[in-house]
Image 1 (cartoon, rainbow, N blue to C red):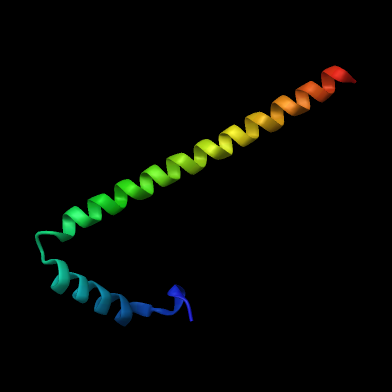
Image 2 (image 1 turned 90 degrees about the vertical axis):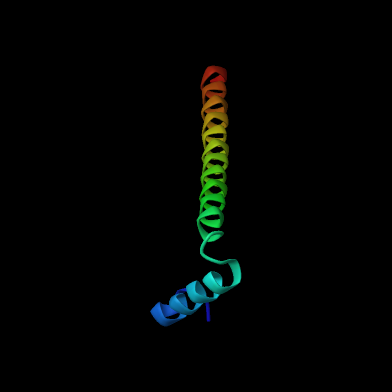
Length: 67
């Protein structure tokens, strides 16, 4: 049982509970904060992947120069 098995009724229930708990005024703020967090996470992970690719390229160039 994972998040993929929630289905439409489960999502509706979760959204209703979030609306009851946080209220209609707070939900946009929570959504904005979640979006910013995901954006920063994606930026960080793509930066790490780019650094890794650069390191591999430098290592390959170094090996070619030695040969």
